Image (cartoon, rainbow, N blue to C red; front, side):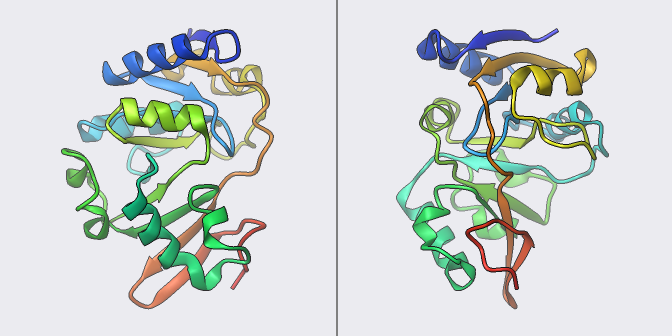
Amino acid sequence: MAQIISAYENLSDALQLAAQTLNAGGIIVFPTDTVYGLLARYTEPSDLGRLNAAKGRSPEKPIAALAAEEPNLVEVMRRAVEPICGAKPDQLVPGALTIVMALELWQDRLPKGMDKLPYKQIGVRVPRHSALQELLKTCGGWLMATSANKEGMPTLHSLDGVLGQLGDGAGIELAVDGGDCGNEASGVALVTSQGTEIIRNHPMLLRR
């Protein structure tokens, strides 16, 4: 069963324990600016398989990454989605937009090891969440992340609901309670040489 710690009672302790767990190779549940996420550091492909197993889905299914806010990365992402934004790009990056591009287009910005991800493409999101940004910076700037819900089941807003849905066998070592994560999952945009396509819509995007 996962250890639970409240971000409200002592945010510093929660962040320290979350970083220690991630840096030791563990999986955690952590609140984000969209929904609760399942987070892990990447060192080898089995880390991706463990995240997928926690969700109850195929081990080969691609997992996105969360990135710390960094000016050059943010500028690249904003430029990529400017043509399809129904709002200013700076409201989505940092924010609720995952951008999928070929792995080699991210490689100059990926930390050591993540350039060897077994993917042709990877989705990247820069969250607009101060505690999560602090955690990212403590863990090398990048974390693999997916929504904390069972495959095919709805995302839940409370930590109790999330843990109840995932079950004790999900392999989660730590869960950080950040209260109600009542927002929508991120939008997803695929950027290729042919243009930009919306894969999952979001209120701030124009559906094409």
